Figure 1 (cartoon, rainbow, N blue to C red):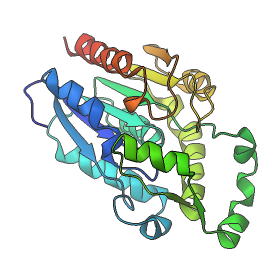
Figure 2 (cartoon, rainbow, N blue to C red):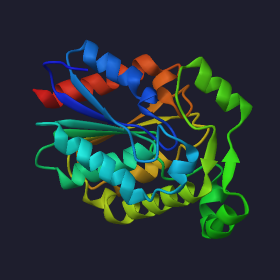
Figure 3 (cartoon, helix red, strand yellow):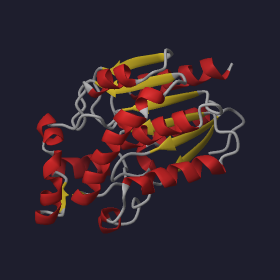
Length: 240
């Protein structure tokens, strides 16, 4: 979405597609921003394709997309995409003016799954795919979201490896202005992820905004106007 304002890269989440970032992109474009999005490796094809990918492949998608944009100033990442956005914030800190991390995947719901991550090598052999619920499928249809309807478990294991890498090697090195946004009623990521994230970020310029009525995919949730305006205010303040 071409515009004359700041250049912004949007990064979608695990098993999803840029459709979940489209509402944010459309709003920012309406305000003049020059908006770009990336499709992560193994996404937008089949769950079987995603099953073969490692988390560095997703990072490669993001890095390549970022480097094709001449003068990108802001990055917005959602869920797993927020982990990848935080790494851009470290590796391109001289170029970026700010990063926005939404529904960041640090603590999965229920919390017990995080503690059982050591079992994934067994789980992925016994049950390579786990279906999403019928309610989730209906939610995707209602909001015109393109996403896989099952989780490839080898890829879930990769996402958890990415979480561990980001917590240890990336978040403590983020020094640019950071906006953290979290739905208070997140049904997939434990809302306490945002507090952990705020603790791990090194930057002094960081702000947490809770969306009181929102679940995980906040871009189509009841607080979306608050979401859009909070993002726009953050960008426009740093753009001056």
